[in-house]
Image (cartoon, rainbow, N blue to C red):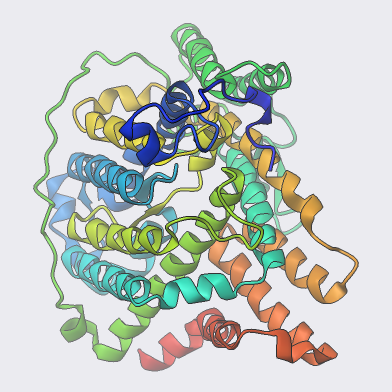
Length: 490
């Protein structure tokens, strides 16, 4: 994998420089302290939006709304922002110290949206977070017993590569959508369009284009710190543009405005975090909606959490050059256990399940190769609790440019796939294409697993399929048709 090629090889001594160097394997992985710092900072910058976005999904605007609970009320914005930053920081530091890989954690967007849209209509927020905690405990048990690792190792190498490529397309698509470069068309055909009615002339989208080209040129010229330099430079440009034209934010509703946050220097820099949501958890959902309905909700959470994280880790491990030819990486079990703990921690703090973030690829693209970069990212998240206003300075359009760049780097692994065998080509293609089109890593993995089992088995190659892959494919079938099952149980 050539993800780090644009920044050039690290100039590091041939012998490890002290205990920390040996522990994190910085020299052994061809990295340096400077690269790890830069990578950790870039990962934080591209992920910092979660401190703003998670409260918009889970939170609201007043304590009166928060009191409504079951009838559709929300948690309070400032409280969600505080626990989002805290949990992301603690879990990222823990993962960096234990798994020693450059993967950062934060509240998973798929699960927080599922909670807000599908779960809290029937249960209270504390009860919803109780289901998240149970989901995390199940995942942790699967990891501790080794079953999660066995499933990970049962995935064929071709599908693991396809997962990496699919994630590359997925995060590039996220960047294009978040920047306004691609938007819903409002009609069935085509479902998406270029910008607003084919125009990308808005200042925020043009800022994204400037950032994209700037980072690409810097990487092509092999400038160290290309992504970080591009993000900082484009943020300065966006601040100047906002101060002149007063574009303002739109929360994704207006194509001519900034998608999420306007790049304005805050008048207030420091704010004390409100952490009162910690521990506000209840397991009363089973009594409120019934055991079977609650179990189906947990099943959905586990499947989404389990395979989103597995796919993301696979892609990031390959991108950071720590995976072997089978796609397995060092300290796999530790990584999976910590990821399960992240789900428990997210539920316990009401920030939603915390999982590995695909945006970690931006720091890897900057050169991060070890867990020390994750510790840098985690510390910045902890600080973000107190400097929440500063997290709103970098607009989502600028972070989106970095995601598209990293997506291009990850898609380059498509060259390692054997397209001459159609029993491999179709499952690989479905894995790759379903991820961005459905906005879900888990859906792409499911489509790949099911098609792999069916096509290989029906073409006379059933003996080469792992029994675990059969079981997981059957589980995905249940996952994909869970709607009628949940309706029957309701």
